[in-house]
Length: 299
Image (cartoon, rainbow, N blue to C red; front, side):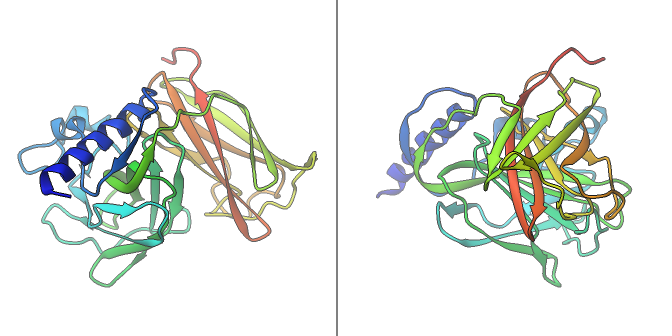
């Protein structure tokens, strides 16, 4: 394929991926390799590609910016093939451009890496390893072609607060659009049924409780995972804003394992969100996914 045709094929596939992310269309198209950056992210950046730091930036939800607070997510892997196990590499750089090599431990890890498709139908929660030079790497296999977002959730040792930085990733292959699953308060994964109780209210803390059962019986053998009996990631449909979610039990062993895991989450705006709950049973981590819409107007 000639260079011009490759550019055309990638542009068409990228348009299809973003249309699907917003619930538009169901066409099938090829995806060619390449790096992408939304115009929305460019509008928040200065001439050097760094996000502006100011009052507006301070209230931007996590994951929408590649740079914040003097730190930048430098994604060394621009594209990956669908359905193939390969290595994803990246570096977190400080304001001087130097790789960050000192981090605080949060929820049992120095850095949490989330990879999600723009349509929020594919999700991976990864824990990469860091080399002495500050390069992070992790094996990953992403199931379908299309546009993805990579989120690095971490706290540098020199920073007061944690950061969530985001960057785009193209997954190549034959692309097929998927609609966002309809809202539901139950999800089934690996033979377990998970029920969600609670709703998101814009601009206000909301309590979300998940109960796990199997064959109609409550599961009381949940194992600690990342310092609690469950880990929850919430992403806003459309722009994939990353919500900060906190478990009610922060420390491992502070509660008796039971069928319920509770969290506090704050939705920054009205809309539709995708919730991914990781829980551990029998030394295996399972992920239940929910689509949730906000209720009320918050304050």
